[in-house]
Length: 235
Image (tube, rainbow, N blue to C red; front, side):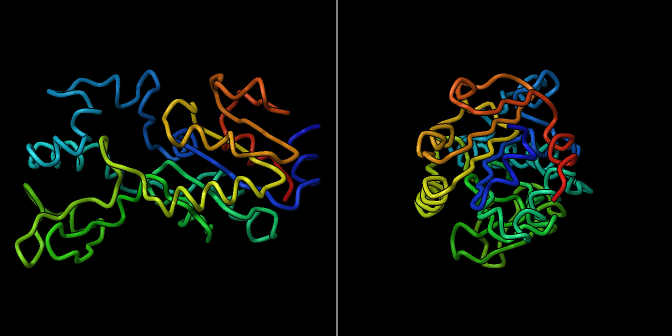
């Protein structure tokens, strides 16, 4: 079956996506040839984006974070927009994303499960007050709350646990879906990569430029940019 035929045949689709969904919006992938893991800094990105580094070298963390994680002017691409239309039509039940850029919501998606949080939200580690992305972007050094506490991005750093509610919700949606579309993710980062194992529905589709460990179990594998693929569908 083609992707169009699978979509037409489906009543309960869940989309599970990663960094490749946003690269066509100008947001760099972590592991691609020109991604963050292959750029040169005083520390490797995975070290900088860790809980330990945030706690011990907070100012250094924010230098990198403002420079590389706060992407200004990024807009939803055809993948985001198509998924929002699928939800509007009642076919897509949930978007589960590893991304922290908020582009699914900007495209109009309502039921988005953010496994790794969002750069759009930040909170005081002392009093819990929330701040928007502009507050952090405009700050210098370590952003501080009015109470004096350090403001931390509401994103899951390395060494931190995923939110239990997000995990439970993601597993629930995947286990009930008749179609799971996995897109723009290498399926190498756990525990999120293991979510595919909870799918027991009819159609498993994988759209990714490079092979993934789940390809052999998929009904359809498309090695192409996801915006190009989803943008060609008739919804």
